[in-house]
Every structure is written in structure tokens, then in C-alpha cells.
Length: 487
Image 1: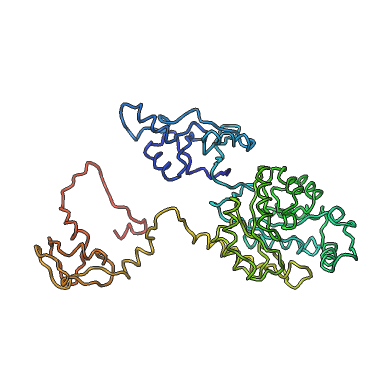
Image 2: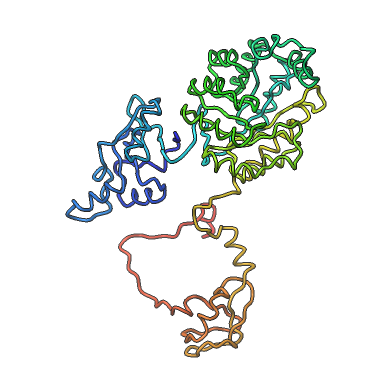
């Protein structure tokens, strides 16, 4: 299910003409339009079936009738915040789209059965929205609250959608209460030592969360244990991130899902079988989540990134997918957008040589800013694969200047039959396109064509005869305001 506040293409006013409503239904592909008052209150709906019913009952066919004449006033609706399980039952009855209203009856959201996605605060995360970019600060603040705030500022300057931190209760999370266990291998000892040195206290993290909010950016956090999740819930965290290390931790996943908040799951260090098991488990819980393709090597060699797996990840799970990267540079996350990534996560640091495992795979502030810029450019450039290709304005100009046309080799008089030796192909493209050559040959000329003159479609279809038009009202030609005096 997708809950969206982008409802403009699915609504019309009560006094909209039916012909305009039908055009909108055809364009939005949802087979329904919701009718609202001028103040946005839901009045009814018009579906394909409602139009057919009206057509069979009306005595006089007039597609300019108002929408309120055709609409079904008994539209099924729910209040915003209704349990998703209740809405799902409506979908079971063959309904594909359900309107959600506020307490005053205003249409504010739509729930779609066959689309996936959710909102984090006011930010839509779906295949139809811009990618959600996360600046992962993690523990790159080195345990310094002032550095943490500085990193928040850099993230804002880069244009990301949120800043993310990590919260862990060392006593509950690690054996021996997080004390450096000499029996552990060197890697585990090093990790515990770093965490002990570079942790912010919960109160300090909350202060940073508040600082981020005050600066207008969304803070998110990874809870590494149930106690941390409880603390973040008390704070009112809007969404969560699940680390790759906890992707198979069903106890923690269930607790996060039961908060009702959406979350992002990194899939590093997991096999495809484990991914399928976790997705099935989350599906049973009715959770809203995104799977982030990830390789948990720091740094990840490019040969191990396997970015194309994003496509398979989506196919085998049916879930929204994204990318959490630990490779160096920005090219891989940018490329992931073209493969359908809806969420991007990259680490942020002020110095890649600082102590800690994350710094060497992190982006500097200027690199993060460039990544965001290029991601947005790629998103704009991807366009749409659902509609036929059209010639753009710039192409039309270049087509006229650079393309080729069918041109008369010699002077041709009215009444002559066009033969191949009368025509040549030359630039510019202001006349008939070369692909119409065979259509042109054999036609009888009904105008005087000078040597070097262009052939036009009218030379194939015939000249349109001039008519004397009579208008019973004033008419004019639209012009740019600054050209008015010249005219």
C-alpha cells in the first residue's frame, strides 16, 4: 500500500466538465477521480463504472455536464491515521484507491493498493518520488557533540534529506557489559575500544537531534538494541534505520515494526535466503520498510559492490529498494539511481584520516554535496518509460537547423509530375523529411516551386484552398509582452 499526499492528478472540482474529468482519468491510470469542493472537501468519486452508468441513464449526451452530475456520492472513505489493516480489507473488495480525509472532511491523502511507499514526516518515499538521501554521521563525531553539530551543518549544506546517528547501550548490547574482552579477537577488541571512546551519551544525541530539527533537517537514528529503541521512541523518532548486523535479528525487527514507524534495512552480510526470510517476516508484521543493497566491507572493492543486484533484490522481494554504500567515491550511489534506488545512504566525515573504521569510506562535505547534485541531475534526466517519445523544444530547433529536407533540383511548374531526378536531399530541415521521398515521387505539382525550394506535406496531400473566414467576435495573436511595442 502507498499512502500519498500528492493528490492533484486524482481530484477535480464539482463543476469541472465531464470531458476534462475523463481526460484526467485517462492520464492518471487510476480509473477514478475524486470530486472535491472549492475548499477541498470530499464530495464523491467518478470511476469508469460511474461514467458508464450515467451514459446509459442520460437522455441527452453532453460531455460538458458538471462532475457533480455524474459522481457517486457514496464513496468509501476513511479518516487519516486509520489502521492499515482496515484499509486493506477495502482493497480485498476490489477497490484500488481509497481517499483519506481529515476531521473537517478535507481530502488530504490517497491509499493505493498496487503501489508501494510511505511517508517519513512530510517526505514521500516511493518509486515515484525523488530519492531519499541519508547522510550517515554514525560515530564520525568522535564523541564530540560540537563536531556532531558541525557535521549536521555540512549535511544541510549538501542538500540531503536527513542526518543519521547511532545509539547503543554498551551494557546491554555486548557481553561482559561491553568491557574489552581480552578473549575476543583483535577485530572485536578494536571495535569495542572505538565505541567506548567515541560514543555520545543519549542526552547528547537527543541534543543533536533537536539541533538538527531546529536547522530544518530530519534526524534519524539506528537503534542497536531494545533499550536504545525504547529511548528513541520516548523521544519521538520519526523513522529508523536497521544496521546490516541486525538484519536477521527478528526480535529487534519486530519491536521496530510494532512502533508503526517506517524503517530502512541494510542487507550487508546476508545471503539471499536470509533476505527472503526477513522480508517474509516483515511482511507478516505489515511493516513499511526499504531494503538497502549493501556490502559491509570497509572500504568495499568496486568488484564486490554488485550494484546490479538491486534489480534482483526488487524482483525477489517486491519491496522498495535503495543503496547503502561503503565504497570510496560517489559514482556507485549515483549509478544506483538508474537501477531504481529510492533511498541512498553515504557516510559523512570532515577528515578521512581520523581514527575509526567509517572515516575512510566516508565522503567529505564537498563530495557529499556533489553527490547530491549529480543524483538530482540523474533523476531529472531519467524521464519516464511509460509514454511515447516526443521531440523536445530544443530538438525542434536543431531539427530545423541541422536536419535535412527534400529540395527541388530545378524549377518545377504546376501540373508537372514529380520524378526522382527533380529531388535532392539537403539541409536545413525546414521542409519535408527525407523519409517521405517515395511518397512524394509521382505526385502532381499544383504550385510553382523554385529551384532549391522545399517540398512540404501539402505537396503530398494537396494544397489547402484559402477560405474567407468571418468571425463574430474580436480575435488576436498571443505575443510576449516585451515584443508588444515592436509589433
